[in-house]
Length: 288
Image (cartoon, rainbow, N blue to C red; front, top):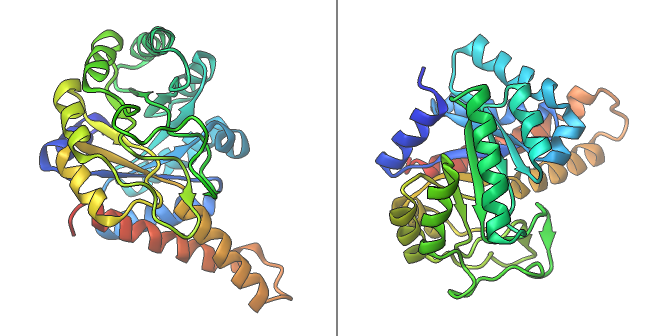
């Protein structure tokens, strides 16, 4: 089985994208894994700081790696949106396959300094651990939004510039780079999210020289996904869509079965709904 770096390099070369889906519980994990296994595709399980605190840092690693070993399948775990070196260190020490330092709200020089520290620590512990970092603020919350979050810019002037991307990657040594290209975290209520700047994606990929990651995938129209992947996105993050599917299916299950008390029965519809979202996104990302 290829390691995660090889899988992402291959996706970058083949102009497809690996799907990254967040979990808060084991129901989400099985939903994601079963969809990826059905399609025979690699997949990354992500947990933000809040999600890791809920599931357990080492417990999440044990869950994902136990599935990988039992089924001999390319399922990996990523410490999503980590805001300090201390928590990056925690994830590296726990055995995560990848980790993201999110310094997008910091001044660029400070972001570079901490990111470099994270890269050096990860390399010292295990050179196979991938380190990603972000440049360009796109918000922080995977939820339904009434408006674009404060501080998020979607005009050409406020997006990540190719020159800044090139400098950032060169000075930090990151394996993966996450830019602001019109994407935002969360889904706008009842309307599609802003359109992506595909030309900016292409220019940043050429300048950065490493695979690009698209955060805030929920709410983006299908055409923007396929165009962005062909322009240089090799990894796409989805979270809010899964949360909405989980919530809606759970509400339906509780309404239709008010006397049911067995969690595994109550959750069956939610697992199916999350799996359907993952299945459709994986097909789109791989042009299937």
